[in-house]
Image (cartoon, rainbow over all chains, first blue to last red; front, side, top):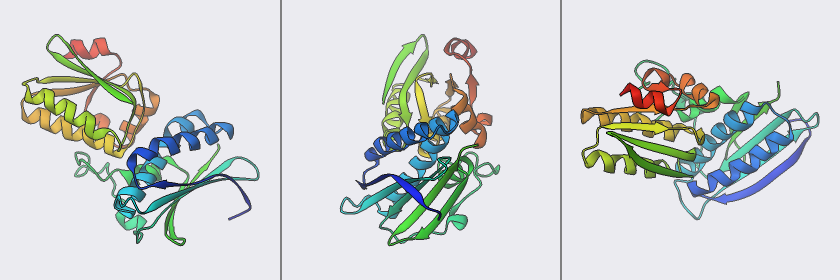
Length: 142
Length: 110
């Protein structure tokens, strides 16, 4: 990854009630970058909420002794935000776990939309091992 | 974030203030199920004061819709802003729910 400025780097407990606070901090960064309004109000908040809830509920299984690290970085041109969400879980296969929730048999399902939404709402979603399991969301202006 | 429940005629109206996400979805679900258990049949959820909804919030809406229908009732939605409309369209949930542009229209539609 090209040289990036770290805008935010924090660790949170494995508690879903922490999510909104972290999302607000990243939203603030989106507004400073002058990302499009819908990216600040919808795309980033929802995609990040999904990444954080996956990390807390599935990665760390809500084990309060485990943490989730959130690192947001901005490129030199100031038009790209990269958010890494790292948990202490074993990781998962992103493409195998993503279900097309718009398929007729899935529309009425009560769950299974998280990974699909993440991939619809940001420019790129990647998942890799990085001293833990990391989901990387990349959002580009324009 | 909070949920306000009030009756307008025969309809239970729920206002969602703030986000509807994994941290509070269960609260909304329980409040609506409590009303359903009391015998209420018609429900309207108003999103005029809602920021964003995540997949678990959408899941709760689907779940409530099913449970209310099983009891012979109906759940309708109102006042989705452009962001929320996008979310419902992306997930095709706009095809599952009857969605009105205003609370008044939604109330009249029952």
